[in-house]
Every structure is written in structure tokens, then in C-alpha cells.
Length: 326
Image 1 (cartoon, rainbow, N blue to C red):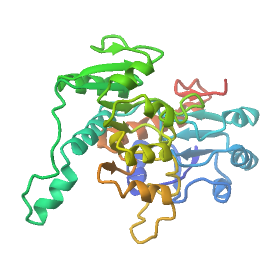
Image 2 (cartoon, helix red, strand yellow):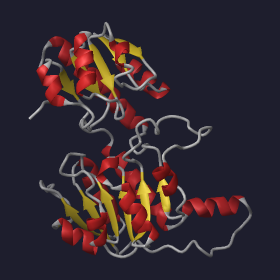
Image 3 (cartoon, rainbow, N blue to C red):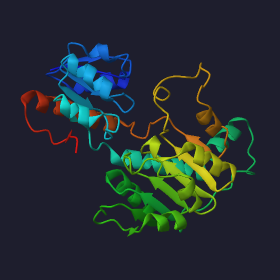
């Protein structure tokens, strides 16, 4: 099958090429937008990543050029208009899970780095400053962690935090079996947690799950971690909470306006996003550029599953990872 791969980085080309034996892959650096959709002309399938735009007008353009399949190199599919795909007979498949332990480990890494002020400590030692003032943290053992969402990633995070000796409160409409956690309503989780970590998909119901109201229900000085989807957090609300010191620390691997910002070298550019620039001014904020998934294991699994989805589509077979409009 002829497939164009949007938003290609060198690691995408390496792992997808290694996984593909029977498909003709063309790797494209630009991300998919209405302006770049023409690059898919002549292809049977398009392979997309999280910041590619598969809105209604883009889908219609792809369909007009003969694209019949979309395969996502991600678990989330909120960037794809499934209703319009259905109208045009375009089948869509995703990678439902990849290295959940790796994402969970990154979330906990953000907690540890924020708690023990590791970026500041590293820079101080590099400058020959060995003073400890301003580096005071807290013992995670005995504290309460709130885990919102206990799918594969959230469940892995629960197990790690239980290993630290933390009490874990969890919230999920579909509780996981075998987790040594207490499932509670969100109001209780907000109120009792010292650290809160988000592991839910982005839907209308979860958009800005963390907002002025929910932040007001949290403990003073709470730590908030988001390695899931940027739209779960109202950025302006957390900035206000940081300024008032309601929020004690913030760790983000995702950002609600990350399209066109993350996954590229912007070191020589002036940031045009004033909200993101404001976040960077806080000493108790740690942001990574959507790298929680970025492990050898995850990239291998993403590539293998993506190629398998293409193979199943080409054969006209059922695809267990297919997503459809409700």
C-alpha cells in the first residue's frame, strides 16, 4: 500500500522502515494541515501523529485525492473528524497502547524533579554553587497521590506510586482490577491529594478538566502533572493558581496550544505564544516537549502496530485498532 507519513522525524522513518516490509512509505516532514493536504495526492493511506490536523475540510480534501485509510501513530484520535471520515468511507485506526510504563515513569520523573528541585540543583552545581537553600522538598512516602484515569498508563503510574509508599486515590468510570488503590469521586480526589496526575483522553467531557473551579477544590500547594493531553488543563487557570501559590508545582509534557510548537527546534525563534512564555517564567514549573512516550520500546510498538493496521486495511480485514464515529 502507498502511504504518506506526515510530521516525520528521523526516528519515525527509522522505526517505520524497519517494521515495514510490504508497504511503500513516503516520509514527509510537514504536519498535515489544509495547506499541506495536497502532499497526499496519489496515496492510498495517510499516517498521522498527534498534531496533524484531520479536520472536516482536510478529510474532504484527502478523500477527493483517493485516500482511503488513515493510520495514527498515537492512541488519541481527537484530532480526526470521524464523522466526516465515515461519510467518505475512510477507515481510521490508531495505536491504542504503547509503552504505558514509559509514560508513567516520565510522569513520576516530573514529580521527583519538581519535588527535589533537580533542574535548579543541577544548574547550581554546574556553577560551583553547593548551597542547599531553596532546594527543600518533601518525602513522597506517606503522601496522597490522586490518579485521574486508570487505563494502562494510569494503572502503571498507580503501581509506581504505591511502590513509593504513597496512598493512591483513583478516579475512573471503569475501575481497573487488581490495583491497590481507593476509587473515589473527583471532588474527594481534588480535596485530599498532595500530588495529582492526569491520565485520561481528551473528549468534550474532559476538556479543561482542570480549571478555576477544580483548582479551587484542591489542597493549597498541590502538585499537578499532565502527560496526557494538553486540553485537559486550562492554562490560564493554572497560571493564576501558580501566581496565588494555590498550585505548588506544575509538570507538563503536553500543552493545549502545542500544535506548531512542539516537535521542532524553536531555539532560534521568538516565542509568539505569550501564555506559554509566561509558564516558563515560574521556577516551580517543569515542561518537557511531549516526550513521555519517547522510548525505544514505544517507538518499536508504534511502528509495528501502525504497519499491522495498514496490512489489515489493505487486506480488507477487520482491524482491532479501528476507531469509528459513534
